[in-house]
Every structure is written in structure tokens, then in C-alpha cells.
Amino acid sequence: MNVLVVGNGAREHALAWKLRQSARLTDLFIAPGNAGTAALGSNLPVQTSDFAGLLDAVRVHRVELVVVGPEEPLANGLVDYLTEHGVAAYGPTRAASAIESSKSFAKEVMASAGVPTAAARSFDGLDAAMQYLDELEQQGAGPPVVKADGLAAGKGVAVCDDFATARAAVAAALQRQVFGHAGLRVLIEERMTGPEVSAHAFSDGVTAVPMVYSCDYKRIGDGDTGPNTGGMGAYSPPGFLTQADEERIRRDVIEPVIAELARRGRPFRGALYPGMMLTPCGPRVVEFNCRSGDPETQVLMPRLTTDLLEICLAVTRGALADISIGWSDRPAVGVVLASGGYPGDYQTGLPISGLDTLDTDVVAFHAGTRLSGDGRALTAGGRVLTVVAAGSTIAEARARAYENATRIRFDGVTFRTDIALREIATAPNSPRL
Ligand code: AMP
Ligand code: GLY
Image 1 (cartoon, rainbow, N blue to C red):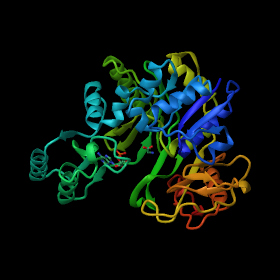
Image 2 (cartoon, rainbow, N blue to C red; image 1 turned 90 degrees about the vertical axis):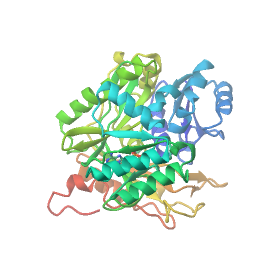
Image 3 (cartoon, rainbow, N blue to C red; image 1 turned 120 degrees about the vertical axis):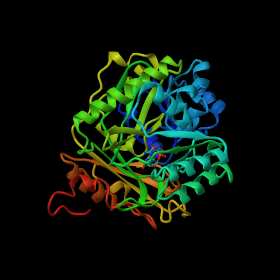
Image 4 (spheres, helix red, strand yellow; image 1 turned 180 degrees about the vertical axis):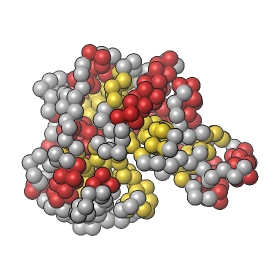
């Protein structure tokens, strides 16, 4: 079977890497892909927004399944478009993707389904939003979180330490329109506290099968300092998550939301990813994503022991209940290597060395990379690679990920040194790297 993966990040490299292991796979295509995916299949020069170009590629290359990685084409209806043209596609429809592309819709679904989350109100008008902030402040409530309703490339959330910041965030979105259309509605949300966990589940619209759990690191700097990024690392599993928490997330979040979306005629088929916070009142939803996480996918795929192609087919055919999905017990840690200056300005086109020196079972999933004319890997983006290692313990996986990551060189390379450190920081004499 020929398969096309849509996207060009390390998440898509990880999906392509796992699909490549399937005995049922014939040819693999990635649009547009990167230097890493070029080693697994054929990169096609078609952008993820070019739906007609993707359909042409499907026809030319006799593709029987399309796997869509990023949220943008999902929210814009790529799966609807392919399905209308008779092509099987893994990922939610535009209507089901609204669980991520409209935070107010997600809140409404959660309210109907009784899912625990932060209290929130949505506003389209500046005056009403500012008045609500005044009321909250007068009532003695803590400073809230202000969120752009739509997709804002991970930049639309302001976790405020005071009301002045909250007012500025509301004005930026509704008045100055810094997030464009995505910020013309804002959510003003109660601020929660607690450690965060990424939950993921495969769903065929009816059945939901939770994946193993993971944690990502969003800030650029050690100790969660500095600006937000597309993700600087991840690990799986989080040792602090209890079985009771996992059970509550499945029973109180994943299953009710899948059922509620089906009830509303928007069955969710693909990977549902609720970002969770373990608050003093129990696990509560921070946000929903309509696709698998980046960089979480890079640590989840190495732990998946079931054929991903079988899973994707079962999802598209509504047959998830007929298969069983297995996971390795070995923890995995992924460290993102980024360009110097990221998430601000950075240089690209820099040669990357050391990729051929990694241990055979350590993988460098590519994101911002491309091949030079003579076949060498060059940097081509802010986040360049995710180096992922497994181990018999999280400490071993972490040590191996960092040891391998430091063999890779490019000018200005930067990475966090504390990925998964919290899992082992309690062990005496544990090395920082
Ligand atoms: P999001 O873009 O929705 O993933 O939000 C980015 C980050 O903002 C989350 O990972 C949280 O760390 C933080 N955040 C979002 N909503 C809340 C909330 N209600 N309370 C506290 N932190 C939040
Ligand atoms: N890891 C955050 C995201 O994929 O949205």
C-alpha cells in the first residue's frame, strides 16, 4: 500500500519512520517533508495548503492512505476534501478539528460533556471583555489566562501575573488584532496550577484508545524560562502520573468528548490530544488538539509496538475496536536541537555534522532541515532536530539522548539541558546532563 504523509516537521518524520516499519507499506511519500524524511521515502514538493496539488500527487503515485500531521490543513478541511474525492485520509474533518481551532467550541463541548476544565468566558467585543476583567478584579479573583480563540501557532495564550497584563493581552487581540482573524474572539479563563501532561488517544469516531502519556517542554530556557516555542523536548512516561489519574483522564475527558462530538454529528477520527493539568482538584483540561503533539509524537512512536499503518487504517474504517494496540515499557526521551536565536531570528543553511555518529537505536527526527545540492543536511528552520533515545529507565534514556545529541553539531546549536530532569532529580548524585 502506498502512503502519503502530509507535513514537514519532526512529528511527521516520526510518523513516517513508524509507517516505514509496516510490512504492508509499499511506497512512502512525504509532502513536503525534510532531509530526514527523504531517507525514508520520496519527498514531494507540494505544500500542506495546496489541496489540489496533494490530490494530484495521490493520483499520480497511487496513494491509498493519506496521513495528515499538522492542525492547519485539518482545520482547513483537507480530510473532507480528500474523502470527497474518494481518498482515505487519517485525521479529523474540519468540523471535528474545531475542538482545537475554536477554543470557545472546545469549552462548549466540554461543558455539555461534563469535562473538568478551567472556567472561561468568550468575548468578541473589547468593552465587554474589559468590563469582565474589572469585575473579576473587584471580586478579588486571581489574574486570568487570556487566549485567542483560533489557531495562533502556539502564540495566542497569555498566562497573566496581573490584571494590567490581562488587559494588554485583550487589547492586543481584539483591538490591535495581532493574531488576525484567530484573535477576534478571546477567552478569559481561570488560571489553574499543577504539572502538565499530554494525553493522546486514537479514535475512529466511536471507540477511543488512549496512548501512553508524555510531557512536553514549551519554553526555550531551562527551568521553563523565556518565551514559548514549538516545543524543546518531551519524554514518556511521566512517572508522577498515577494509574488513577490515567483512568480519570480516559473516563472523564477522552471518552465523553469523543461521545459528545459523535452526538453533534462531528465524529472525531484521528489522534485526539487533550493537554491536561494535574490540579489540586484533579486532572483538568488546558486545551484540546486535533492531532498528535510535537515533540510528543517523537517519543510516542518509538514506544508504539503495533503497526501504525494498521492503526491508521482501523481509524479511517471505524474498526479500532477490532485491533489491540501495544506499547513498549522502555521510557523515551527526546531533546530538540534548535538554531541559535530561536524563537527569535536565526540563521539557516548551516551544515549539520555528526548525524552518522549516533548509536544505531537512537533516532534524530528532522524538522527544519533540507538537503544541499550535494546531499548534505543543512539547517532550514528554528527547531532543527529531535534526538530520541530509549532506555531501561528514564535516567538511562535521558543520558543516552543527551550523549547522542552532543555529537551533532551546527553553528549556534542550542538545546535545553533539563528535559526529563524532574523525573530523576530526586535521585542523589544524578548528573544534570
Ligand atoms: P495552549 O496554547 O492552550 O497550549 O497554552 C499554552 C500554555 O499556557 C499551556 O501549556 C499552559 O502552560 C498555559 N495555560 C493555558 N491555559 C492555562 C490555564 N487555564 N491555567 C494555567 N495555565 C494555562
Ligand atoms: N506539544 C504541543 C503541541 O503539539 O501543540
